[in-house]
Amino acid sequence: MGLLSKKDAALITDPFADNNPITIQVLGICSALAITAELKASIVMAVSVLFVMGVGNVVISLMRNIIPSKIRIIAQLIVVATLVIIVDLVLKAVAYDLSKTLGAFIGLIITNCIIMGRFEAFALANGPWRSFLDGIGNAVGYGVILILVGFFRELLGSGTLLGFKVLGDPIEKTGLYALGYENNGFMLLAPMALIVVGIIIWIQRSRNEALIEEN
Image (cartoon, one colour):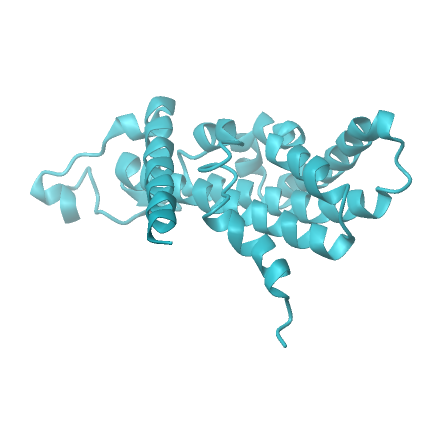
């Protein structure tokens, strides 16, 4: 018998594709547009949300029987705000320049509709273990899209990945630049982020529809 039952494993695998928070539920779009001009920022945001959702879901699940229903939203906000403060302080301690780049977007994790949605829809009705798996699954599903968008935007917009020049030097005209390639500056603008996200949503939904037709 495996470590996870089929039902528990689905909590992690479904948000990757069949029920992805961004491409299927269309949640968390703002951060996907705002901080994905650089791959590094996308990765840090993904890891931050992973921590907040994984821990937050467990905390809410443990407290679900003692939180009065009338103040459950306030309690959820307090939990997520505390976790976001921890993330912000750690980020400032280990990567101050990046924390300045992300700026207010780390704080806006507090109002990320994916997190509050999972608290309400799942953690309040399930035990800590399943809530943890649900949080991890949705956070990873969200993070994968952020990283994909950040990958293409930085690569095509700046010719770099994680700050490293992977297509050559545009000033010295080496690599692809020697063949006449030019960086697409539009990729660094928010409208192109929306287009990239839209393409990923189209691919994901087309795949899901094809699978449904096959079955």
